[in-house]
Length: 304
Ligand SMILES: Nc1nc2c(c(=O)[nH]1)N[C@H]1C(S)=C(S)[C@@H](COP(=O)(O)O)O[C@H]1N2
Ligand SMILES: [Mo]
Image 1 (cartoon, rainbow, N blue to C red):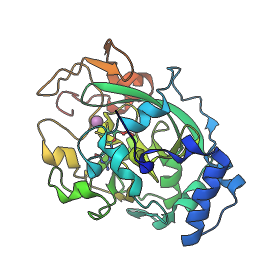
Image 2 (image 1 turned 45 degrees about the vertical axis):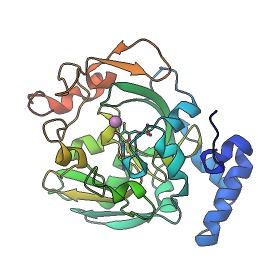
Image 3 (image 1 turned 135 degrees about the vertical axis):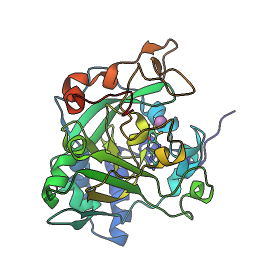
């Protein structure tokens, strides 16, 4: 029999949403600013975005129990079991580097950068599965514009929290820590790229990268870095965790591409979690119309 520890059960499963948010905000209040429950609830309800896919979303249970988050273990079930204890408030994100107005944001500051939007996106993992997730977030471009990138800002690098006490997976050398990712500036500024702070209209569950994670829907899932503490505008292409660990398997671009195989398996098909049969994988994960232009003239076999 499968039993769940209390920390595995989402507060939203046992408590009405308003009470759940009230308690979350009350606990946050003990450490920082106290928000009214009503304000917090409204803050996470995103306006529906025209950029959403029409595919029907996976269930909250699927989205929160089948995860990749190596800081909390390498099995798909590990993050749901182990990430609950991560302290996500107070939390700050440094936005620095080639920026006229570099600054540090608290999560509450971040929620004020732009109106929240609900974006239903397909997420394609390099291991051959996919999910459809109703994120709540803000366009990354809104945040970057606020810090005023200089003309030298050609790339953006991202870092996850490094705290082996709270993130036991970091005590193993399975990856170089902290988890690192990067985008070219035009990819980072693209309207499809978001910083997610919630899903299904609620606070982001820890296993999905609370309190804030990147979502880049035309790239393999590992680009969508969780629990971000640092964003850096820079002139040179950043090092990324998966590229450092296996450069022949994971390139910098990592665009979903059914015609470029991973060295150990084909990327032509994927299994949507919950389905039995596989479906063909689409170039750029189905977002080609919006993003193919970013890569015009590039050999995507070389820049994989
Ligand atoms: N910090 C961090 N971010 C991460 C990962 C990770 O191990 N650590 N895994 C990545 C991978 S491989 C995938 S497929 C997605 C999974 O996101 P999800 O669990 O919310 O579906 O998170 C990405 N972000
Ligand atoms: Mo992944």
